Every structure is written in C-alpha cells, then in structure tokens.
Image (cartoon, rainbow over all chains, first blue to last red; front, side, top):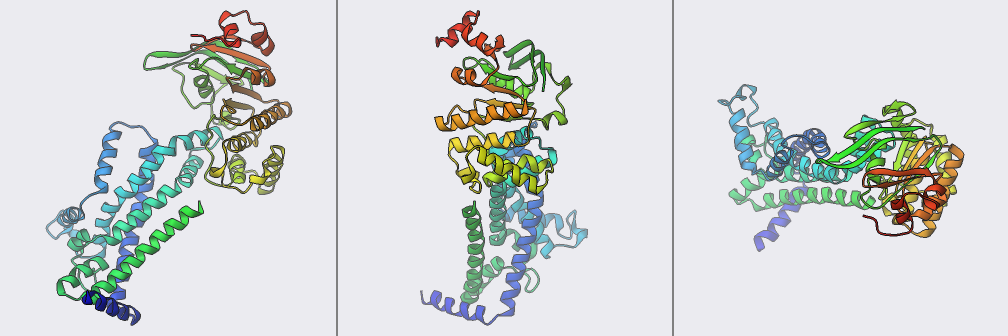
Length: 229
Length: 236
C-alpha cells in the first residue's frame, strides 16, 4: 500500500516538474491515437453507412466479420502487421517497422472495425427512415448523405470516441510493431508495461494518471455531447 | 397534379397484394383512400410516393413518369413521422433550405406557418422531445411549407388527440383551398373522409372496388362491400 501512495506522490512531482521524457511519451501517444482514429473515421463512417443502408449479397457474412473484428486481439494484429512490414516481409522495403507509422497502421486495423460496427448499427436502426424522409422532401443523393451523417452524428461520435479509447489504451500491437524505443516509439501503455517490469512504480503511476485523465476528458466530451442533444 | 395509374400490380413473394387496372386522380382533387386493414391502401400510396416499386404497370404524374423534378413537387406524411434531431424550426425549414430559398424568406414562411398551426411556442424545442400530436403537426408543417403539388397523408391522425386532429384537418383544408394541390389521404376514419375529401376510393383485397364523389361512395354506395364497411360491419 505504501508503495502505491509513494508512487502517487512521485507521480504528481514528475507531472508538475514537466519531465521531458513523460511529456514526449504523452505527446506521441496522443499523436498516434489521433492519427489512427482520424484515418479510421475516414474509412469507417462511409463504410458503416453503406453497409447499413444498402442491400448486397453476403451482407450478413460481412456484418458478422465486422463484429468479429471489433474484438480482434491486438497482439494478433500486431503480429500480422509486423510480419508484413518487417525487413523480410512483403512490405519490408517501406522501412517502417519500429516507427510511429507502423503503430498507426496497426491501430487503424483495430479501430476501423469498431467505428464501422457502431455506425452500421445506427444506420441499420434509422437509416431507412432517414432515406425515406429525404426522398419525400425532395433531397438529392448528396443532400440525403449529408442528412444521414447529421442524423447519425451521435452514433458516429460514439464510434469515434470508442475507437480513440481503444487506440490510446492499446498495448499489444504497438509494442510489437513499434518496439517501445525510447524517444521514438515509446507510448504511454508500452512505457507503463516496461516501467512495471523495472519496478519504477512512480513513473508508471504518473503515466497511468495521465492516461486516466485523457480517458476522463474523452468520456466527458461524449457525455456533454449527448446531454446537449 | 394529375395522377394516372395503369395496370398496376404489386406482389410480395408471389402473393398479389395490389391490382389496379386503370385509375385517374384529377389535379386539385382531395382523395380519401378508405378500406379495411390489409386492403393495400398504404402500399398504393407508397408506390405513388415513389417509396416502393410496383411489380408491373406504371404511374404518370401530369403525363410524366416519376423523375427527380416530380419528387421535388410531392411529399408524404407518415403515421409515425421521423423528425430530424434538431429544433422544430429547422425541421420545418429543411425542405426550403434544400431548395435554396433565402434565409429571410425561410424565417418568414416558417414563422407564419407556426402561427397558423398554433405551435409557435415550440419553435426552438428539440423535435425529439415533442408529444405525438405536436410531432405530427410539425411533420405536416414541414410537408406543406414548400407548397407541394401532391401531398400524400398516410393515416396522419391515427394516434393523436382530438384537438391536434382538429388543427391538422384545419391546416390541410386551408392548404388545399389555397394551393389547389392534389391531396391523397389514407384514413380509417369515415367521418374524417366526409369532412375533408372531395372524392373517395374504397379498397378491398388490393383492388379499388369503388371510386367516386365522397357523398356517392359513403352515403349511397351501390356496392355491397362498401356499404357493409360504411355501416361498420366486419368484412372479410
């Protein structure tokens, strides 16, 4: 117990003293998570709307695959991405292994199905009604799509926040493809895992506090948004 | 808007649910579509509104098949309306916004309609928080704000209170008198059909079995099934 209390004290000291290493780790984590969530949003929102609103062969199978991918084990994604981008892999020539780019790719693969699944669910529930309304009011295809996105904004926002939550808290995939290199690919989650192994609880707790704080901010934003509705 | 129906059929999994040989709705007519449940009334109006495809046959609107320009001139109000997740004002203004009407005219038109329908007090309220009657009034206001040539109402007053029904009917009647638009209303309420409609079509088992002036169909029908329906008997 005393270790935890002491850890908290040290953590606050580290945060207040603006420790460079901690802030580098925090900033890289935010960058990698934001970049992967942004790319995933661009891919997943139209995909979720199309799957939810259109009928096509094997739709049920596609939906089941998306649901399965929503809970993909990060280490498996990390391993697969690593095998592709490692020097001997088919994409090895890109030279991106152990870089933030590799971490973003792995996270895009984890986050895209989450946002797609949530947007798909919203579209499945309300998409038909929205389309019908747009048609009866004389909206064209572009106006219908804009209306659909506006009306599904809570689902889209929930998907983005959930995806971001997954990205920022994920450790397995970024550890494998990023390598947890100090000052280069070390993010909050990989740093916590490493610091625990080293017995440096103060630093681990300090980063943990920041991670929780970021998570709190994200959830507060979601709550505020829903309350506003 | 004139509507001409020719050899229209609709089947679901080989079950024929609608079969109308030839029918014509004159421009400016206020047509009531009545009949028992499962008669095909809603299927018919959905096809007219372009929300469902006929299996065979065709519908012409002012001698033109359904196209983008026709869609711009017609609208439909459903029994359970979908209101946009925004204010009442924005809901009613939406059809004008997509028609690129200037902001000042939108403001004027919406305010005038809100006043006419006695719902100005909910102007800034989120439409998702409205009662059933209020929601239906907003849906009607949104439908008539852009002066459609064809207004289709699918049981618009089925689940709302008498005061709201009165206001809805008053608004629709006023809109009809002012615009001379063609209006088609699906209703189970014969009194409502009597109050509003110039013409009535009685449907049974997917067919229009009687079509004529309201007083002729409701008060002096020569068809046995129509008479039974009007007298409140169960028809199979």
